[in-house]
Length: 187
View 1 (cartoon, one colour):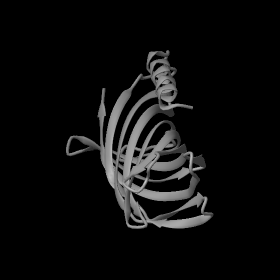
View 2: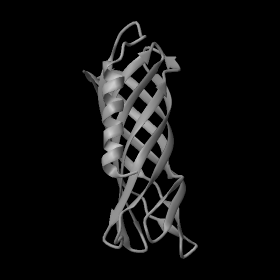
View 3: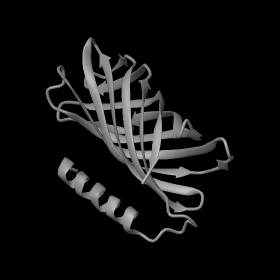
View 4: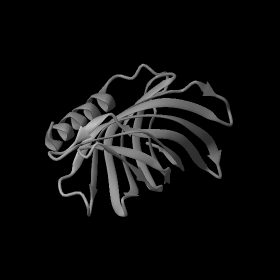
């Protein structure tokens, strides 16, 4: 799938999600911005049939979501993480969709576990041909409403690359953990 085809699919999904009739009692849409750290991990490349360690690095995530039902939301996201492998910096960019369950809606905290699926691209000085792949991730997000007038978020999760590569090699990696914090704004 080319990047143009993927962007077309994501655009269609955004239109469908945000123009659909919501089954929730209150139709809420919101945007969130989170920053944090991608932890150390390990990537596999074939050829040369070898594992490579990756360093921890800065991570940024932006989400646009809407409620689908009283206890479920869906949305689209963009995330960018910086890491390094073999002394070369690598940037991991992902466009995707997520689905969140709203399992505990207490007055002072909301717990929202979810899944994310995305189209991932890795670029860097040592990468001649961009590496693309399928990101499958999971996370648990905590929302603390109305702290100093803001909805504060904390998230722990993982990214992975179940399949992917470029014309030279297959590149995959098992889950790599991350920690993020940020804010959410109602639309």
